[in-house]
Image 1: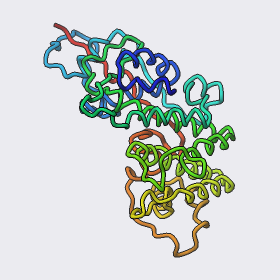
Image 2: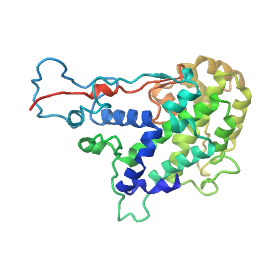
Image 3: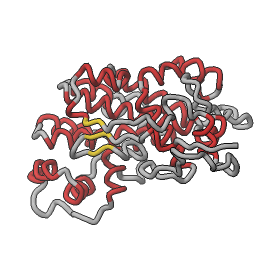
Image 4: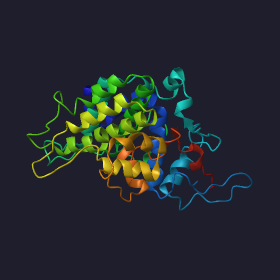
Length: 334
């Protein structure tokens, strides 16, 4: 992955490697691209944009929004046509060959592979050495020849690819856990927490880029793994995660932070579930040790599933909700 570091600085470099991403993470790439377009241009991912189908085409091709022009221009492409529909995937129902089919990159990840992906994410958040020469705004183009010129402002590679990376890593974590390969997950986590960590953690304060990685990826994965293990009553995994979390030192002498705050975690599980995870973890803290408090669903999804990553992942049902490609179809004349 290190050779891809230049993709954030060069459109040519990204275009060279784009096939890698669209071939190995196709669902994640297209799902998030359409989600990003809907978020940017004011359409909910669950609410179809205005469409005109069947009968005389009388709507003029004028005063179209950017996303409507995008859909119109690409309307003959199989991925954009209104007849195309996306399935919601229940991850628990997928066997290994199906995981390899739907999530090729995530399915082949091991601890080192996850670390390399997250390093690529960190490159996106690093400040250019020469601040007088800002990084170019590389666009998340695709090898499927879908023209994104009309919506390029919503597809900054530096802003969008990190989210896709986090989603891919999360699916990889889930897949490794299900296959009993938790050692690989811990291999990844220990690159950031514990004696073999690789980053500039205390005694020197972590960089801004590292803080983003820790708070948006590493710490949420710790919580995610605890919840998965609690649902299955895997006490040995819960113990290992909590021990690892307790090994993380305070970023500065003025800040006291723990990757897993049991009050936040248990408040989320008590309010939003999964109930079995709450009941499994509850005996670990004696009566009076828990300070339950009010939490929102948005906070809890971010706390356990990572900020802006798995907003359509159902933690209880382990179902992945995808954006329907067909919602962006529009036809007009003129």
